[in-house]
Image 1 (cartoon, one colour):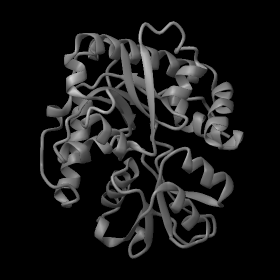
Image 2 (image 1 turned 90 degrees about the vertical axis):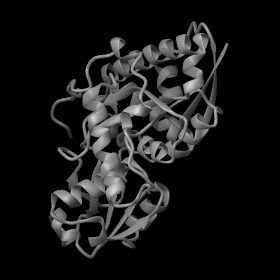
Image 3 (image 1 turned 120 degrees about the vertical axis):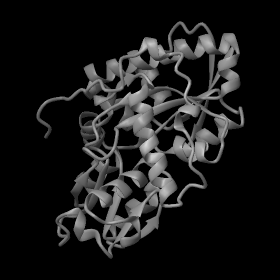
Image 4 (image 1 turned 90 degrees about the horizontal axis):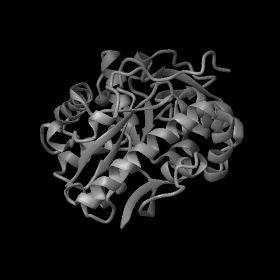
Length: 304
């Protein structure tokens, strides 16, 4: 039996291999690599892959488009790596200063919602800024060259900009985003008894691999840096700020409610085509194997 898994470079396959969790598999895994969460969810909906890992916002856009998906597990981490960045010499000091300024962000990403929520907290709307929809590589180039005033992004790009592009944190997602990532499966895969058992086993391996990351941040930073081309120190910064803090948790009522807030916010702004119940796109059968979504993210103490 083969489990088809959608992945991003340096993500689930890399961490499972580094943690020794691909040893003695009772099934085969066929990996397919994608550039970001939205195309992974397109593949899940099309039954091209059985399951894949994404951030907190792609499932909202996919569900709004009536994609054939079910969220089956979550990871809860700190929101410190979800940030709006400016250059060190920028006159911008707080979120309210973004009014009328240009902000780069990846459309439909977790950073897209973080920008919306951070502006709302500051009494502004997305219409008060000049949004430049750019994928991370293009946004990094624009930010580095001063072509945009700010950049809403996530780790490891946050760590990369702070280390290499004279970046400064204007505000983080702390208190405005839920810090969740998700594993999302195709409903037909969940209805297949053999694949459902494989998915349960796969989620257990991911959970153990995430525990290994927390216990071995330096070892994982070396592997992750090699996989992605990130310098070791950037990778380590990201592990200690965000990547290594995550804990696999249940997709429970609290997690669903926080995702519903995201869905409602985008619907209100007419950035998605309809309102819907996020709970309709969740399968809770694996919740008993996982702690509640309110479980606190781990920390590494004082960060450098």
